[in-house]
Image 1 (cartoon, rainbow, N blue to C red):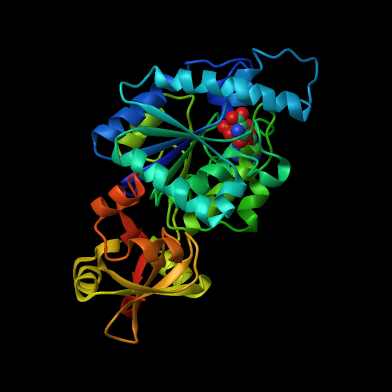
Image 2 (image 1 turned 90 degrees about the vertical axis):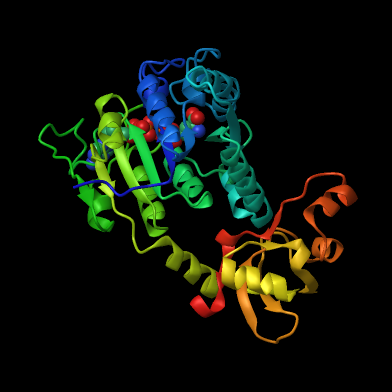
Length: 371
Ligand SMILES: Nc1ncnc2c1ncn2[C@@H]1O[C@H](COP(=O)(O)OP(=O)(O)O)[C@@H](O)[C@H]1O
Ligand SMILES: N[C@@H](CCC(=O)OP(=O)(O)O)C(=O)O
């Protein structure tokens, strides 16, 4: 069985690979992963890296007698170790890497969600490798995702990835923790994640790691329900990446549910309440309906309602009362009143900075007759 093709992936690398000796970073396992990333990019596939390891890397710099790290010590380790972790990756690449730190509170806030997404898309467009981690140095418990498996799944949804690779120190999901049960057998493919799958997944014995198998299955559940094929693979074995490049599954593949477009359409139509309307001219109607284009400010005639960046809005022709599309708007109603009808270059002159080109990106726009 060949693995499904993909065009954009998030690759999550756990602490067990970044700092296998549990104290400071190591390049031992990263070379094979870096080669994989380089090869994928050469094939035209886009990659976002989600890397753990800041706490493990920081252990080297901050002495402690505690086995269970006090929170301020853990944060300090993350702050100093993040640098080492980034440097450890950067030396493998002759293209630039970008550090992107976030917390769950950033992803919950719509304006910040849109802002992070724009940053990640822009980095990808410019061939920069984004390296994402949780902002452990400042996050409180309420702000955190808490583990990078779930964070990677959220980032995969955020960037509309079609594959998520979780690289760990184990060959995949087994029917029991192989470190505790020598007879445990690997499960190559999971078609549906239910309680019986969660029941197999245990925690971790690694003091730098966070979730064990449980958070990986949670991540797979999140990602597959958004149409993203999810793999758990062993990043300690170089041949893992050879198999992946040949379209073979060396670990456990959790197959995606439904197609992402229908999920997104469903979410847009049924979950998001529109907060206002954007009235557009005939040229914009044509661009949206016939060309599948994004909505630009130049085609906007008027704005109704009071909405914020990241809110859902309806789009309708200024000539009609029927909405033609629904989408997530990158500007507030107030901002749109200033920039409506203008070309992007004019807006840049007016505001003194380059604005986001798309008012509604085509990935966030659903034509209503299709829904
Ligand atoms: N059913 C299972 N199948 C495979 N591994 C499991 C299972 N249950 C628990 N584990 C444990 O999960 C560990 C991987 O998770 P973790 O230590 O958090 O790694 P990472 O740092 O890569 O996130 C494995 O080393 C293994 O001990
Ligand atoms: N954000 C933390 C890692 C959290 C985490 O989930 O670790 P892991 O289980 O090794 O992927 C760090 O950089 O140390």
